[in-house]
Image (cartoon, rainbow over all chains, first blue to last red; front, side):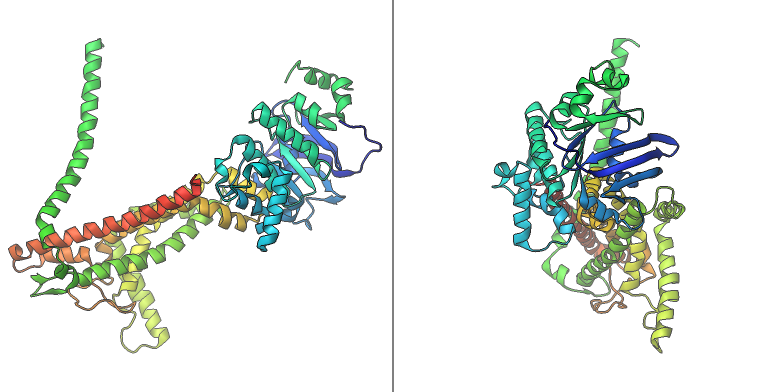
Length: 258
Length: 303
């Protein structure tokens, strides 16, 4: 956590966002700003809607049949659900890292190059340069530089997750969404991911869903607490953890439920 | 139940299941041994490289080998694209509640249950009399050109027969591609078609090739569908055009077994033909299995 001299602008913002799976309301009238070049942590008990909220930011919920929403999500003041917005384009601007590392059964190089190739990049030198840059950015380069052509499935769990982060960064998105990126990793691998998140925020706007309160406190600048599909409270991380306005937030962050 | 009876029941079941498994292996071994013992000595280079002679009582089976191979190849070329595309539609593009997809699935299941002789008649009626005649009329042939039995029509008939196998196994293979890989691809800004071509189909390839193996081994041995659609009783020439008739190992086996004037004299030929048919089918299977194992190892990422 660092002191912010002035409040940066909102890179993404939801306004009165309500999302339903069929008739079940997953998130209810959530208005939340994701500030530029800050790490926003989304916390809350299982099923509180934090992951659903995250997935709606790059429209991954579109893939689940029967979802519908009301309200707006803005990226740089443009509604991402607007007819004129190409969802492929949106996902290149708003990248995502998943809970379970999911490298393709391809080589390490091809995994990182994937987003570039589908984006139309063909030049070999350019691809190689971007792959190296992304792997360095993902703090994985030194570990894999001699085996770029080996299968990504041969990497350890922590390495695979850093590969997925590097893969997401290769496309150079503006926003990076992370859905419990370290929940399946051991403490050492987790520490590396957290360190990485710290470094990434200079370039990216990050939203991270986490179950781990300490992690939220360690990595984020701002924290949003979700409960039963509603946004209970959002503020500077320090304030949420030391001086929450809401009783429910206090109960959750102090471990009374969750 | 006492301990002794429980033990006895257990032992009985073990023996019963073991016997059943042994029976199955035993039957296969018996068939193979019989065919090899009676046929192997007759499978010579002359037999493999010469057409039949002396009213089927001499010579070899070269045209039948070529005919079977060409037929199976054409069938595979026809069935794989259609089968794979159908499965891709069913699994990747049709919405889960799609009525069309439901109907297609019902059709596939029913197609799989149709007796093969019906496919033969269907091939005759549809491909030769309907499509063939239509083509002759449109292309201006005075004499029958396409409206007669030929290797193209026979292979298309077999393709229809093996279509359900390919569709079902391809759909199974598509289902086995982890959802994680699709979402990862889409989250990286790939379109649905890019995801299909670059992630889903490569991931499903081993399973798709399994479908090809099954289709080939089913198709290579079927005789009924080609009886009316292209198989020739005796034809020393190799099929040279898509409308040529052809000899076929399976049909030749039937001919040797039932149409010979001298059963004793043709028996070694019959055994040898069956042996070659079995070997050809096994060889085709083996090739496909090797390809499949290779791609699977590659897909899993050989370390």
